[in-house]
Length: 279
Image (cartoon, rainbow, N blue to C red; front, side, top):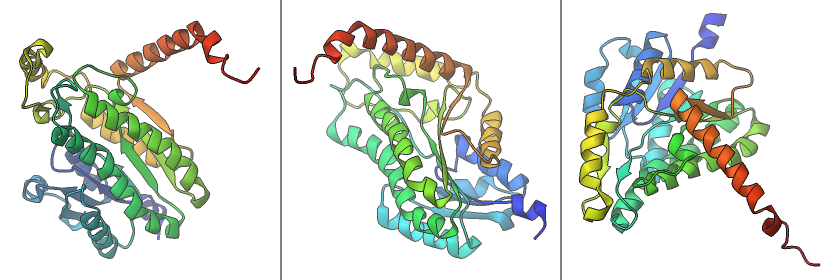
């Protein structure tokens, strides 16, 4: 195997039929990588891929089903022989206040954004451990660091992805496996078009107006998704990739300002914080 062959990897990407997942899939295939691409809508995914199909393995998958994930990963390894990079990309945001969200709406958001990621990691780890190599990339958001009104279920899931990745990094380091949690800001994908909104609306929260605003902003986002996808490829080629990666000037500014506010608040209440030990 020559050096060029060694640089080619087998990628597993969830939520690959549109948005950033689809863009990343196309970039990888054009670079000679092999891609296991999953989606609930596998027909739409297959329609999008017209080149390098010999390196493309689409799988219909509901990531909220641990049994389906187990079967899909077994199929992926059987097809390509290994998995080198996992991108937990599938997700969506539910817009609405916590009061308006039904139990089913809130739980569904958590199932896809959090438990879907957990299912993938749990089932791919035996293969990565055996290989003693691999890179797990978990897609969070600036909403994984900063709370936003009317996005509580998405915040809950994306904050959890950050903590989950920090714990995972410690667990898998002895096996030579790397992990990165990526927090993108506003990138010009179809994400805003796939926003879901609470069915039960209470006028005082203004969700009708929020829906109109988000619809108008779709297609105006400053972030270039091609650049984001190429950065994901870049970090998999690093000996020491970042554990945390903020992407986008908007995210950088939001998160750093949040950290400054937290530091000031912690210092303001320092006396109470330090008063809790036995005398």
